[in-house]
Each structure stands twice: as C-alpha cells, then as structure tokens.
Image: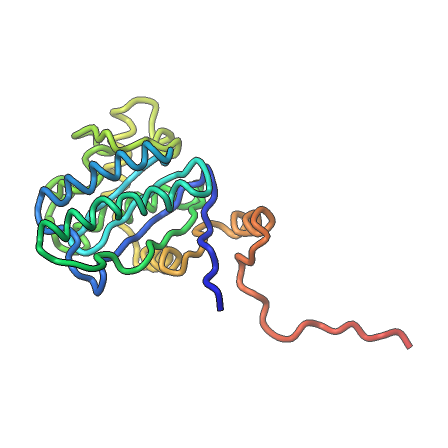
Length: 232
C-alpha cells in the first residue's frame, strides 16, 4: 500500500519530531547544536517557514513551525539534513544515514494546542533529566519565551502575544504556564498525534480539516453500514 502523504497545510502550525536512526546521538557537542540551528534558521528563511519553538535533544529534536505553503516544511527539513548529515559524518568519521526515516509531523489547532505544544517541546530537558532548570539547557527556545535571551530563529505566534499586552506580561504569563507542567494525558495525546501524523485539535477542528482536505481525519464509524429496507 502506498504511503499516504503528510498532511501539511499552509499558514497552520505543525509540530515536528525527527529522531536519530536507532535512537543514536545526533548532537554530541556544542558545535553540533550551533551548526544545526544555523542551518535551520537559513533554511526556514529561504522556504518562508516561521519557527515558533524548538528543542534539540541528544537523539531527537522537536520544532513547532508554520509554513507559508504546502512544500516549505518538507523542503526546509530536507535542506537542513543535506547540510548537517554530511558535515556530521565528516566530523565524526562515520557514514550513512543519521536520521530515522522522514520526519513526523502533526498539524495543530492553535486555539486548543499551540501553547501546550510549546510547553511539550521546552519541558523536554526536564522530563529527560538533562537539566534541573530550563534555563540551564541552552538548546531550546525557552530562554526566548521567558524573556532572558532573544532568539533570532524564533517568530512569535499570535497565541504567544495573547498572553499579555507587554513583553513583561507575556513573559511572566508564559513562565507561570510552563511551571504548571503537563499532565500524563496531555503528553500522551500530543505524542500519539505526532507519531501517527494525525491532526491535534478539537473535534470541530478535525471536522473542518476533513472538509478542507477531502481526507479522512476522524475515526471511521464501527460496524456495518445501516441498510435501508426496501419499500414493499
């Protein structure tokens, strides 16, 4: 059976995950992180993709981004891979693939899940026990959203701006939001959506996507179709 194309929609945020092949390390030192982020920034600008949040973990990465067209997201990730993988292989004297197949992505309902996805991304270092405080981990967008260090890679989304009327109000509200953490159910919901490539949003959001894309989004109804009895 042919693989179904990814569901990528212009001007909608998407949550991306890319893992190392066999969960191998894809970032080993500071230079690796900086190079990847430099090429991600260049590629995002070239393909007109707005990056809203990210985290680079030792064996995987997450990005929250909005493409301006249907092709930009994949083109951005492919270009970063074409630049980073040969450079990484040459540096460490290795060959072959680095990433585990193609990246996975989920289109996001911004009203219901945008801020949850930022928390999901930026809390990764704490969940993985790579840092005791989020500001101790330099390879995420948390410092930008918390108002500690502006990040030229980040384009703030309208949902972030709605947190307050001034930068101080937005940053304080965001810090408080992140400090609330995430429930196991929230984590499971987001994980399941992005790994399956399924949309993440409300029922109404998914219904609207079905009409827009002409693809099955909602689960099929169980059981046999109801048969109408012929008139006698």
